[in-house]
Amino acid sequence: MWIVLASLWERWRPELASMERVNDKMQAGYAPRKGGDPVKACTIWVETWHAILDIMKRSGIDSLDAFDERFGGVNCVFNWVQDFEMELHNAGLKDQRFFHERIALCETMIRRFPNGRLSLANFKSALAESHFQLGDPECGDRLFRRWLDEDPQNGPWVAWSDCYWIFAAEQNKDAARAERILKEALATPGVKDRMLILDRLATVYEETARPRDAEPVREEIQRLGLNNAATAVKPARASADGAAPTAGQGLSRPPPWDPEDLPATRSRLRAGPLTGKPKVGRNERCPCGSGKKFKKCCGRGG
Image (spheres, rainbow, N blue to C red):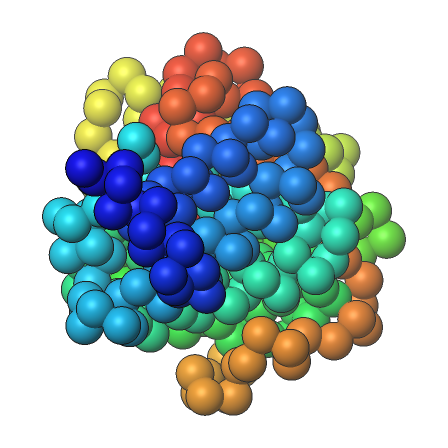
């Protein structure tokens, strides 16, 4: 009976999305994703996302949690929308229009669904990072600063620094900027993921031929691992001249961010995009070689 009703719905109102169509499109996108074709996957999934929003509007559903309660698909939207955000990054490396789609997705999540059970931390980082990818670091800086002002202990310090070093194109790398961001993070009382922040700082030092600065940071990481008490460890040595870092040192604050001033088409190709490094799934092994799942390792910094 359910199949008959679904078929009649498609025949009577072909222009309107249904839960069954959403499920079909969602599953159709996973096949090319698994086959290494993020552009094809995201072409399907952009339509899927618009169909979900359309159903929510017509049905008066005001949250993704409420949508999931009615959906009953193979994958819940809670998990799928996270895969969608990540795959938009990978598709954007091949076709920049998908970075605009990623910006639109993240802005919708942040504006419309701020109180659901799904954390918006990754969407906030992805929004700022996407502006970097499109060559608009000023906008990316404003966004990262906004998220960090809202929650400095749990904010995306590592993701911000990565935009100036690990993920920056060679001609746009700025080790000094990445270092200042990481030092400000370490000077923030109660900052989380301290070991990951220290590791990024040590990496910057090592990759810029500063082994004397990297050594005490690596020692700090080792002590932190042994003690298993992140909040009890002192910040790493600030620099070769011994100056202690202070919150905000060397980092000018951009003008306040206005969410209405950031439509998905505003990014401009100016400074050049970040380097092309595809992202891995939440449950896949971390590419750093730790043996841990990505979400339990380097993925915590996003």
